[in-house]
Length: 330
Image (cartoon, rainbow, N blue to C red; front, side):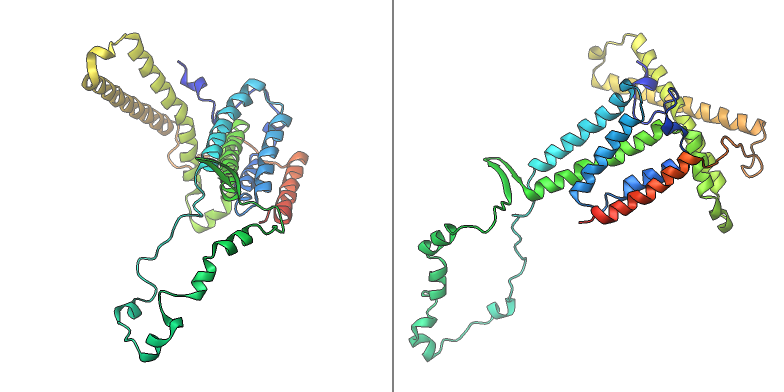
């Protein structure tokens, strides 16, 4: 069991180095934000086109098949299941909405005194109403239903007993499925082709103007870097503890529920202790090397410089937003 390799989502691919790896991290962050914001208030055609663009980008990146098959397979299956569940669920249009109070509560609370004219007039008899009689005439209803319709519009697309698919449910399922695929897979593709140090350095570079307002930008980015570096350590500790439990060949049936709970509680306690020890070791190593204040001891991992392909990618973001406002609106 290797947790570092069995969790394909969000892992950085060091080799092979593709053209998407060489693009500046700030430019890729701009594309990621664009993919996340453009589906808001967009039509279904634009949402489906985003899915197609992401699939085409994955193919053009020339990533190994084993990598993007693992990366895309789980997200695609989850999005398809969400699409089917939302499409088969009721759309909520026919839900009856009954008011809690009557429309004219004051009129109902006061009895109406009958008059002589109303008693003798046959039109005011509550049991005889020409309007209601004409509206509920079955011959009139059948004649209205048999009239030819001006268009072939149908709100209910599929109606087979329990399974009923309407235009509203299909549109809602398209929105939900494409939105989840776009958000998850675009973020995953960004993490796949961008190193964690590049991400944090790019965020620090973009947030550099906020230092004028005395905001702790460097401290925040340093904390983010340490947290990204600490995730593999957590997975390693979990992996070691699971392997230690498996090597002891514990008979879980004899232990029962209470005994199994005590064993896993002990494992969880040991995991927390190991993680605290690792965190203390990292803090001690930083103090020994003089990392007391991040403003005085900054490590430059990358020198940001926009090249030709970076400017082309930036111009592509502008064209992408123009296309969104021209063809993506409802």
